[in-house]
Length: 100
Image: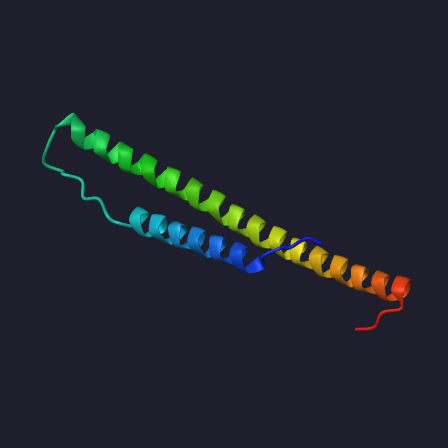
């Protein structure tokens, strides 16, 4: 019999959700561009920030998809586990005349 653990999967998905929340929070932090400077590092910093936002959005999308996959897989294993357990109980009752 399979021993699925939906609770563990939910815990992993919750932790991943917290990581996504932290990334979203960091992504939303404002970056103030220094307007009165001609330093190229200022433009490079702004470009790096914009790239970080793009990467954070991609990471969030991937994590959300992974969380959905973990939860749906765990639920499917839980369903299969339950069905197999029921089939085994029914098979034992039929084969050996056992009752619950």
